[in-house]
Amino acid sequence: MPIITAPVVTPEDPGTPPPIDVPEIGYASVTYVDPTGKRWPMTDLSADWYTLAEGVSGLGAAPYELTADPHPRGGSRLRHVQAQARDIVWPVLVKGADHTAFTANWRSLATAFTRTLRLGADGRRAPGWLEVARPDGSARRIAVYYRSGWEGRGQTATGITWDSAVLTLWCEDPYWLDVQAQTVHRETGTGVDYLAPYPSVSSSQVLGATTVSNPSDVDVWPTWTVTGPATSIAFTREDTGHAFTLDMEATAHGPLLAAETVTISTDPPRLRSGTGENLIAGLNLPEAVLWPLPPGETPVVFQLNGAEAGSAVDLTYYPRYETA
Image (cartoon, rainbow, N blue to C red):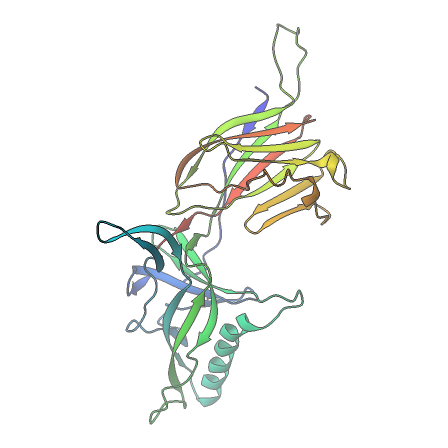
């Protein structure tokens, strides 16, 4: 088969201090990344700010709301489970060599956290990220928004060269994400002559059936990037039969040409060309199901009509976990 397969892992420089013992998660190093991308080490005890061990909470399993129905023979039966947003409580000590240095640090950190509530140029609020790195090099992160708590202790001697705050950070998605993306790549190879040097088959339609392994604790919603040429694109999850098709000829863009791309986001649902065109008109609604990947192994099939050498599909997702 003219198929090239290559798992891709994108590493990220953790840029974090040596690990210390953090309540609820054990030895780890923690970094806060503000909406501008600036990294603030939270567990470097030699720095002018660091996390206070006592009082940290909210790093465990996600909170859930259970919906149950009364059972005629007594008790109840669970009908629905809904993960809820979580709060993380994060105590921080801030200090400085003198009052001027302390004040600058206090103000800078306050801005780094509260900036998550400000609208950006695109009209949206960008979260910060709380990132937990382990001594083995693995790391997980969670998107956070400042809720409350950036206030001093209000006690004698505080507010001069040191003070502490107990932050409450709100997480709209309660699950932790791996910092390394998992990617599955399928690419059409160069076709061959059927009779030279001996009878052979080179498919220009199906890029392949494969099994995608998801190490997550919960479902993930992948992003698909398709590189042309292609006239239509179909993705099928074989264990459930759920599928969706994007017919490029039904869009204003027309068939996907060589090197042109389409990006399909499953959460939130969004289909965009490489130049930003909305391609939702080509989706086979209402039958289409932009399906997730459950934990474990899932058989899937990628199919491109009109594929030629260079046509490719990339599936990308970040594993999601209950705990840090």
